[in-house]
Amino acid sequence: MHQDQPCPFPGKRESGDERRLAIAAAARAIIFEVGLEGLRTRDIAARVGINIATLHYHVPTKEALVALVADSLRQEFKAQAQRNTRAGRSPLEQLRLEFVDFHESVHDTPELIVVLSALIEKGRRDPAIGAIMTPLYDYWRLQFVDIFRRGVSDGTFRPDLDPHAAALITTGALSDYSRQWTSFRASYEQLTAELERAFIANPSLSKDPS
Amino acid sequence: MHQDQPCPFPGKRESGDERRLAIAAAARAIIFEVGLEGLRTRDIAARVGINIATLHYHVPTKEALVALVADSLRQEFKAQAQRNTRAGRSPLEQLRLEFVDFHESVHDTPELIVVLSALIEKGRRDPAIGAIMTPLYDYWRLQFVDIFRRGVSDGTFRPDLDPHAAALITTGALSDYSRQWTSFRASYEQLTAELERAFIANPSLSKDPS
DNA sequence: TTCCCAATCAAACGATTGATTGAGAATTGG
DNA sequence: CCAATTCTCAATCAATCGTTTGATTGGGAA
Image 1 (tube, chains in turn green, blue, cyan, yellow):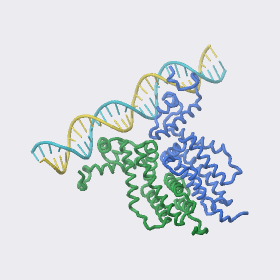
Image 2: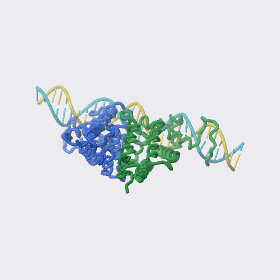
Image 3: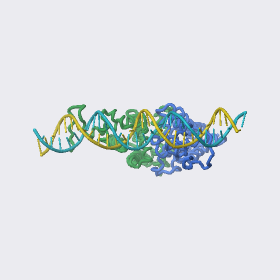
Image 4: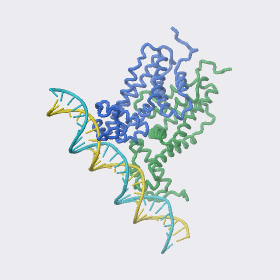
């Protein structure tokens, strides 16, 4: 029994889905501020503006709550991936689009990568979280694998480039940058430019290997 | 009325420094297993084999305990840096030595990088931890900056290579690899080999062979 | 109207948390 | 040997944690 009709009286009761959405958002904000070790169910309830018992009505346990946050990240990445279609673009253009997208994500929702890292780390020891986060991170990296693989085929990138290793380097550098951009002297443009130079084929070499 | 046999030398006491060392080691092991959010002073005391009050005698607060762990990491990195002198070696040799060192560290003490990442993340919000961890991470990256800078000078690496960006890419890729090497198909050798190819000068373009 | 049920809350529960107390054992310097 | 110091522990504290209970609300169905 699901009704699409939004509540005509804001401040009254919200549907279960809306509540769960607000709970996940509040939890993400708190994790960003004080980390997973500072996450308290009462603080989440207070930020949403509901009673602690109401929180447990919608999300039974804290474990399920963290899983809810993980799933909210998954859905957000899924939506982001479906939003921009890269069909018909060259590998280098797609790579640069990924760089721009990532930068925008870090700028618009700075807590996203921080929470993502925290949950990936938690997923290393919590199978329930790992089942959500590992495929998510793999998917992101596989996008780069695909870009590099096709870029090698058409001569954009070095012929001796290892797509998997290059993708690992790229995602590692990007996530590491966003994690501590405060202490980095190098700008994001310097980082992405160096990544391009690292993988791109040398223009002075013959592009036609036949 | 001694408790259930913690010390291999009954009747013997450990000095304050040894105790603090054992406490830091136990805390690191626990952080590796259950994360910072699962770190409990009682668990640390139990692993060391001492009473909870004894733990608080040596380390007054939990906050000081986390700082102690951070400092133990700093000392370990400092000792590691001083252990192997790289004087007289070529930039490429030094880079490969860094790769080997890192791999050995991950292999010998797998909890090291995980705990390092956890404390760096905590240092983002806790100034006391950040004061220890940020310089530590910067120091590691600066080692690569130095290697790349000299490698550019002597023609080992690309002339258009940005040492800071390249170092950021390298540390990011390495730390990201060690954080989740379980789900990576690419081996460590593939990763380091790709890093070398990414930064090394093209052999067909030997521009300055003087 | 009467009933049902998702949603909500005040209050509290049992357990755990970091931290403290006071007394005593072990060690050290004289 | 003694006294001072360092170190240790059983017992305990106050606070907070995640979770539960029991009751209430309000809107839609019967």
